[in-house]
Length: 247
Length: 60
Image (tube, rainbow over all chains, first blue to last red; front, top):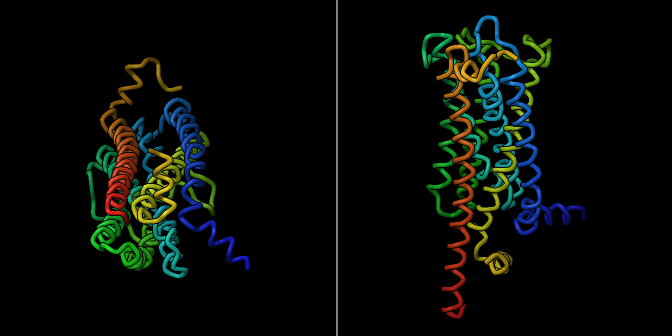
């Protein structure tokens, strides 16, 4: 059966060393994309005609917002896989992604606030885009709090998975909020259906920063997944043997 | 390139607080997250070591 292979790779025991091999590569990619991205953000991209230098916040704000939404989808995907297939690793992956997603959601709100103050004259408004992103941040916190409130990891995974899956409804709401409602927030910076509304170098800087955040997210989530494996599998023989090698 | 001097660069056209506040927090959050993950991994290994010692002392 092809199922045998699949389960072999989905076991924490074989994932643990695999993740260790992947982390340096994704970290290196994050640094490379980050350095080039920052260079373009500050030294290549021109000053904005309307917003002056304040617009440069876009290079951290938009990638952080993208990652906060994308990571939620990935987290919910692993949560759903864990629920459907009852595999241990899938639940661990969901738990490993949540704090990083929460961090990017907070970063999105924080940078948005710092951008809103000079441009709109206010740190915060209760409009659709901002409020739905705040709900996303709370969904991450709720997922983390719910999981940590339940002692049995498998039950914690199932409860968290339910919350994560129901919360997916918020993602299209965030994404389309600028079209569905009147909002202070500007429309999508990048769209699949029309030409970008910004200078090419600005777009390039934003995409590189997004790639850097993406690679960072993979590296840090994999590291956290390894820590979670150690925590949850500490009663197994393979972890005991592993700890002897490491100490 | 939009800058004639380092001072001009750091001033960010008068938006220094907002621009550096955004990038600064991003850097701090990411560095902090990496430290937290490292600490969590260390704690897991410490706990593991303790349990193995206890298990052996108890003869399993």
